Length: 124
Length: 206
Length: 280
Image 1 (tube, each protein chain N blue to C red):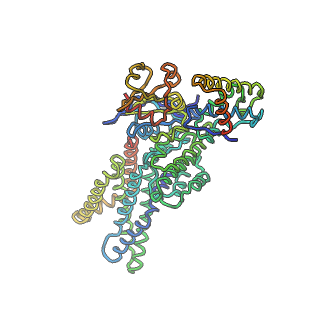
Image 2 (image 1 turned 120 degrees about the vertical axis):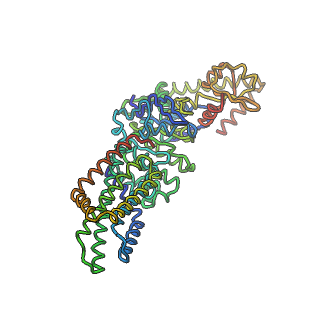
Image 3 (image 1 turned 90 degrees about the horizontal axis):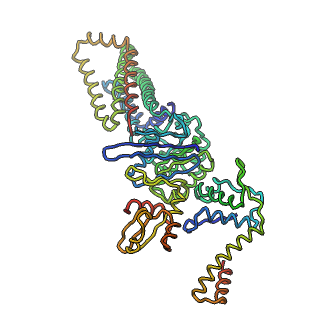
């Protein structure tokens, strides 16, 4: 399992961790009921503080992706993949909306926008 | 406390070559000349302890030792116990040297003389070190060093002066008295010095 | 919440320096970074915690009233105090075996092996990095629950520093363990510390969760006219440069909302420290 965090990003580290776990859960890389590393082991392996990993797990739990069983550990919850995916789609739509608004302000047409999108998509 | 004692003994072990060399040098002097070899005893054990204090000070051992449980009292107690151990060892060495020299020189061993110089030296060493330690614990080895050398010299000179000037019979009386109760005398001084050192060390900051 | 260290109103006066009413708490299971310039009072605080010096105030270790009891579970690395340098690593094992009940010779020699410290070389012959690693091995070998470390990485090269930080993170996997670490190399602490206490001239300037400092605090660069429009309570410090001003702000998000400002930089502990001290 790969988790890559950047210390230079403007995105807080706990959020980076959270998002990466989320995408792994949605993609099925982490399956329902799987035990996640403890906050301390995760902190050690990611070279960050315990509070950071604790925050990440707490956020994940709030959003329903994991469940903490006291004295046992943090487990991946059963999630409805369709709903989860839809949520992600909504997020993408929202972001694209910003993109389109910006494009329209700058008079960039749909074709140009599509080209940029496909280039970025291929590159990543 | 055992750990602190071992620490000092290991320092001695680290410097063993130097100390043995000094011992051999004095043994040689004793063999060739009329030097009073028992002088090695106070000299060697004072020197060994001073070097251990110096090593401690150089690496700020005291600060470190205070982070060990019960560091404060045990540091002081350990120093006194190590002193006693060293006095015992050096005494045995000198005794051995006496026997060895009398064997080589084919002179009979004057047991009375051996015994009295022996005890005189133990008392002397304990006395010097018991005066030394509170001074070292109070002001540190660097400042105390000068005072201690002065003390050693004063002690030796006074002893020499007493032996040469004072009526021998009188002195013998004093010494006889001392020798009779030497263990009480020595233990009393030791305990007083120990109590004073602990008192000083309790208040000390590093 | 269990407390590994609790310092209340610690005050210590010297002729030319005063540690002034310091209070902080290190919760069990966390790392607290103690930062400040040289001479800010870091070592004096640590010496007080360990009873190496006398002080006014109250200090409690591991929730225990008896400090001697607490010291059994504490490992220390002091800035410049250690075993007499004529001894070697093996001697230290002999000494410590008779000193700590929990001393683990096997673990100690494992550390020596891991750190590649020759056990029969006198301490004075070890390199600076090895010397520090030896101190750390000694601090860890009696299975302490709390490490109190005064500048454990100062003077080390980056590789040795990262090795040492890794050791600390491994130590922290046990939730009963805590670390109090002072350093003026703030980048070392940035990633691993849970709390940061920032001390200057004997007073605490900041006591905050580390991630709050890194994520919520920020730097805004602006012109003079812009500065005049920013309310004084919205920034903590301002530093004047020849061409611009640098503001230290406490909450990036709110600042962005209020002033619609685009250029807010992330801050490092080092920048934070400098701005706190050099700004007005």
